[in-house]
Length: 70
Image (cartoon, rainbow, N blue to C red):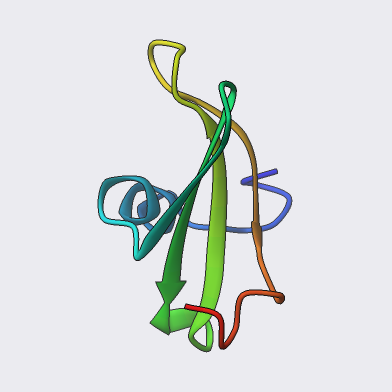
């Protein structure tokens, strides 16, 4: 998905290491949300399984539903 959606790894790293917001959804999903100024201030959501080592990215996408909620 990273390659297909052309999302730079630095944006993903920023979302995981310095998120604007996090959501703990279940034992297998932690969502990291980061506003990406370089991409029109859209919010990148990175869904991670936090219990695997290293952490495993399940999916990532720009979340249009977030605007105005954070």
